[in-house]
Image 1: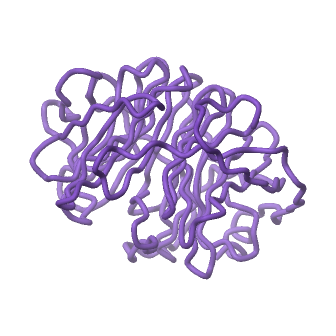
Image 2 (image 1 turned 30 degrees about the vertical axis):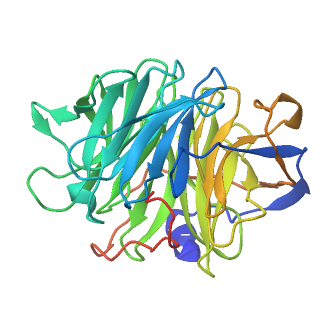
Length: 343
């Protein structure tokens, strides 16, 4: 798949050089009381306020927000019994996410919520949208996607504000599924699209209407998605290998440098989500939920910490504003490891 893309667009081949990165830490998140599993999706700029989801003893999923000392508040949206709080804004006062009761993306109910208030459905001219709402910037703008209101099943990238759709965000690639997952204060969007010829994701950064393809530089890379982006241009995301393991990373968009982030205790997946303006990253794996601290000396919290030794890789970025021809439509998306959050 990657060779085909490079030939069609005349793109440079991936050049990867790996070096040891500076010491870093995964700080375990205190689980939600009584939860069977807890996931963290975002951390505010106070380096203390977080949001995420947990699964209760009855198998229902709830959203939560609170602080790193375990002082949490739970909430639900709709009646699905499955609420995911996917992002928190830098001030820690606004949350976006969705509620889903099935794996059908077009049944996900999107919401925005002011902390301490009831969640509101995200709408387009009064019609609730289905899909995923996620990243928030300091101006209250969110990134996400929505399903075609005409019922075609096509999923479009989206930007919004105040629980309302504001614009469709597109790439030059023909795709049945385009997703935006983060937007920073410079109005740069991070996300992915699904290559309709393979059913696998390709990461994207969109700046002033120009799209960069972001692909993790590993020979065994299968898919890449971006999930977070801060104002300094640090993106976060996930990549899957050909053995079905999901890894996570941070990506410096100013230098083209990736840093792989893997929980040493994880078995099948580590997923990186939101990143704040201090560079702290919300991470969830099949072994637990964490805040990743790229600088061990500035890691918040007083609990036990897991030392990690990330590896940096520098790769040539792929740029394109062309339209690929001849793609066929709507294959199935890749399957995530059991327990991993939908991307």
